[in-house]
Structure formats: C-alpha cells, structure tokens
Length: 314
Image (cartoon, rainbow, N blue to C red; front, side, top):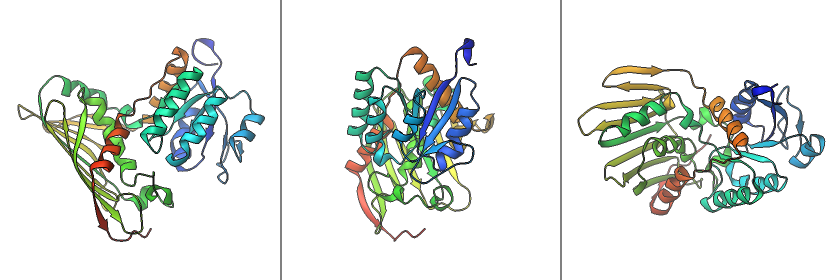
C-alpha cells in the first residue's frame, strides 16, 4: 500500500530506451507510492518489464494504468501526449517536453481541458544542491554567471542519431539541464543576446554552442556547451556576487562550493525526486508545466549564428 494506505499509482512507460532503463524504471520501483505496470516500445524489451509494441496494446492489456511517462525522443512527444491525454491519463514528459514551444503549449492546453495532471520534467532542478544555490542567489546582488556544460556525446548518447536530427537539439539536449537550473535559481527572466551554433555539415543540430544571455536585472550570463568533450566531463555553473563571493555548482547540481569550501556533495537522486513530485501533483490535481528552459533554446536558435563544423561520425 502507498502513502496513508492508498493504493500505489499505476504507471506505464512509452519508450523503453536508455533513459527509461537508467532512470525511470528504478525510480518508479524505488517509490512505494508508485507501481510500474508495463511499458511499450516497437523494439526494446528491458528485463523484468511487461512490454508491448505500442500504447494501444499496452492499455488494452492494462486498463488499470492511471499515468504514463513518455520517454521517447522529443520529436514525437506531442503526438503521443495528445493520445495519452485523450484517454484521461496523467502525463509525465521527459525533458525537453516537446520538439517546439508550440507543441509544448498545445500539450499543456490539452491537459488543462481534460483535467489531467501534467509534469514537464526538468530533472536537474531536483539535484541536491540546487535549492541551496537558489537561496544563496536570492540573498545578494549577482555580478555574473558562467555555465560550462561539456560532455562526450559518444559516451553518453551512443547510437542516438535522433539527437542531431531536426528537433533533437544536439548539445542543447544536455545543455537544457543547465538552463533548467538557471531558470530555477533566478527570479528574473533570462534573455538570449548572442549565440554561436556549431553544426556539423552532416547534422541538423549543434554540437557546440557559445551563448551570451542577460537577466532583466542586467547582469551577464555566459554559457559554453560542448558535445565533444574528452577527459573530465563538466556540468558546472559558476556564480560571482557583486561583493566578489564565488559559488560553484558542479557535477550537474550535486556538489556546491562557496569561496573554496565544499558545502554539499551528494549522490544524484533527481528522478526519485521527480517521481515524488509527479505523485504529489496528481494527489493535488495540479500540473507543473514550465517551458522557460525550452524558450531559451528556441531563442538561441532564432538569434544564433550558424557555423559549419566538421562532419560528425560516431
């Protein structure tokens, strides 16, 4: 039995690829208020999961499913979310919520009209040091922020050709995690002022990006994204206050250092927090559909200078 004796929320998965196997399945199974009933995918069959070729087959076999997490590539999420919402089930959207802002807003409108809970998930916001960073930022004037989000695409996204296709976002797929943190810790809107988008000649999405942003308050934010990083992988945000204090949020938000002193260093448990949040939203009959990180990416694509980069071969 779940919280307060209630039966666990019964969940289905659409998309059974790497992110589902690495994060969604263990996080659902680790929460006593949730029950993973089944999943669907045209090809993938993870061990221990009842799997079906498509959503219709899954729901026909398991009409008891109450909520569905969509873990597919973003290009097809709008179509799938529309079908899920039509059945009256709650929706958990893997990030980014859709391939475009228009699709994301359409999903939100559909969920509101149907009266189902919608979570546009930004897992990095649930990293253990993010809220402490948010508090620190809120208590002082900020001088500048620098983001370095650099990883090896061949290591973290093997075989995921969709990531360089239209709507796949390229290096913004991991980079949007930093933007989800940024928009959480800042109360002011973030505006893109300049972006250099390095796009391999055989791809449709950037493999490297340098981007300058600014808050409504006027201080600068510099972001550097690299999908070809070898050696040490970097997922860090550096913040300097007007008084010269320096905060470093590193390892994707799991480690916090202020003026050289480590204050937080914990393991990553982001998806456990996300699923607890999803459960709470459903109990309260609420939604959480913030698209501000996706808006920043869209603005970068609008303003960005496209620079031809060497051919990418996995």
